[in-house]
Length: 195
Image 1 (cartoon, rainbow, N blue to C red):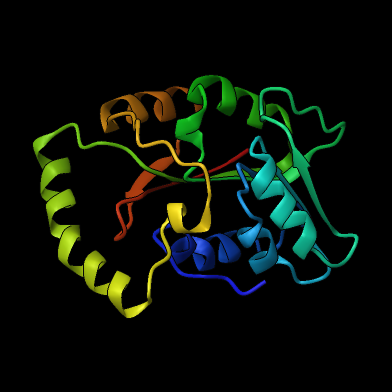
Image 2 (tube, rainbow, N blue to C red):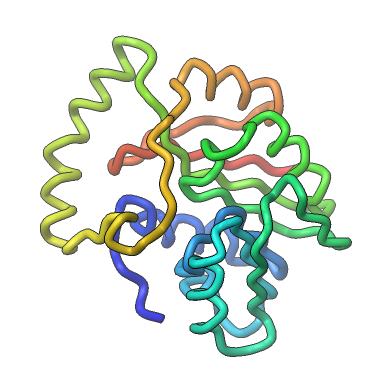
């Protein structure tokens, strides 16, 4: 599968760097599997889950190799019977109860595991709005240069009901102590947390 460019896949290289030493990865809300295919080096065991049967069908049809697994289920009902070195949420955690999802993710991490989030949220403070406005032009230019594919064009289920950054900051502070929230160029925030 060729990885297309959009405001989510723009962060795949960041995820790749952060999971370089990971042997097992869980992609929560994997969509059509594009991140799993991007990260697949033949050695990692990558599991993608998504509640959208169309997306999982696309991912399963494109996969090659036994190290990639795709399953149609919600994170809430997922019971893998194993732990992961990395659990990744790319534009998916706002579809879920974030607090419950982070608690569950922590319970599924290996002793040296990490959680990575590429999230979307609404601005909550004046500084958030300044940052949001400052990202508009460079992000639009990048979208044109890279021929961005929207979720709708890819038939990926999308929710535009985003929490605001005040809520995100509060949950991250409580559930992922010590984690920092960074702002990405393409309307995303980034969180990395390790056990």
